[in-house]
Image (cartoon, rainbow, N blue to C red; front, side, top):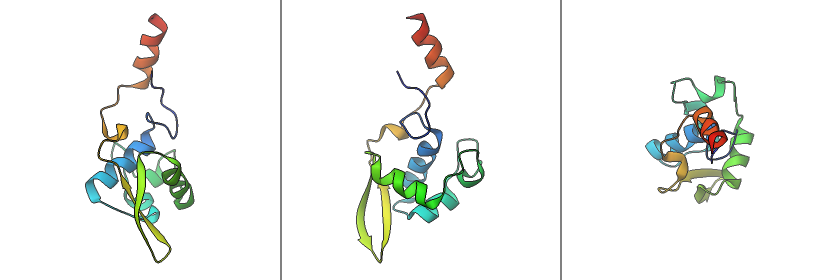
Length: 103
């Protein structure tokens, strides 16, 4: 059972970050905030989630699917694991909740 929450595996902003890192390779938190887009094409920084550089940096260091391959000049370059659940297809959260209620 996966519910859509802000920072878990069913999270739209975390999936946008994982897609961006998967497509573009290692990136800093600032470039992630500036360039990551949701599935709809809306930029992450102007969406209703509106994550800041500090929030993204904190989330990526805590989330198990992201890692820092190297540290240089006090700017971390983040990467996503190739087997990340965030890169998989996500069923709509509403549909999942209805199926759970039926069971």
